[in-house]
Image (cartoon, rainbow, N blue to C red):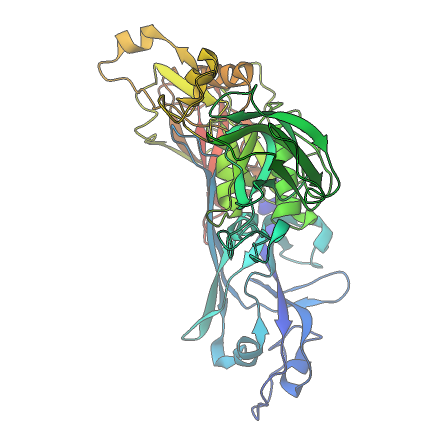
Length: 543
């Protein structure tokens, strides 16, 4: 057991941000300690205000004499984990709950007037000396930081679930809607529909026809550059006549098109009615003018700008220009359906072996799941001196037995066009081959795995947002190195003080007296479970 916990009793604090409305009057006297200092005004009426509800499990007073009454009943029960499956969709999971004592109805007035839903909550942990002053708050470790859900009152108690920072991904991406009043506001055919959004590098998209009389199409709600325009897959028929300030000022000459682009959107106007379908290759920017094409840089900017995630929820270890996955990527949303932050994250990280993780401190951080190696720098060596128990955990059936082939898609084709009368007779053979399939493929193959196992795994092709073959090949090779061999999952119990040194995705060394671990092997922390009543944390480790 760790030295910190052995020095005294375990101490946990909970700080819950609350919005206090004008409360109902209560005739019952308020007992001393029913609320933390500064919150007795809840019973006196008044206007709404922000406050912090502070409780503890053992009773605590910080260095500024702010009390944390002992209302915390069962601490926190929390599970966090990366999703391990062959589709590698980049998600993560975090589930938890807190329970407070409400003996005698001390918290009734608070429950009636304090709104905590989706407001910040922090759980801290330390050691309370058996004799002597309480430790300083700054000396306590953050066990969890996230968001609370609504109160759930019960007999002599109240509980509430807690959410991690990925809650922000539940929000819908706000996109302007066509009013149907004409010109750039669209005609009656698109009235009420969402405008398209283009970010990064994309291939063969179908722009939205917003004016069927003047042949005006919208490409994105922000700036964009067109790298090629195709009519029925042929790039040589309609030529660019340049960029204009007002696309409606003059009609382009027959056989040409003009472009209007800026922070409010990008549009093209054709000089003549097309015979075949119009598609584009393009690169989209953000409305703010931010221009990036690497996948993690795109995702970060979309979270901040397109989805409104507060910057404080982006982990400091996630810079504006990331070196973790320097892969060119992009995607096109045509406005036909609503888009959430989770779907954006899934789309951009699909197949990359990268998960957007809620870090312990309450921020969002991309973590790459790569094959553990003996040369890795480890944060903790887990030995029999530390671990109190170890049990095997079953891997997802899509990863066990090992995979013998990985197929990673790239240069996603947003408009699949089959051969026939819908394609221009002068379209090149290479272009016809590209537009006929949804994704090009990069692959990793290990025939020895196929020969060693009667039914090895063979995942279907994974669609990604990647734009280049070399990047897709790097991803396929990384998947092969990770999942082309037999992997094991282990649930290992260690003291919570040691577990607080680790987060999801951290490298560890593990040497325990069980088959496969006796000689010591490198591993990756892919999950954890914190039980409110235990002094240990169960880590799930992939080796």
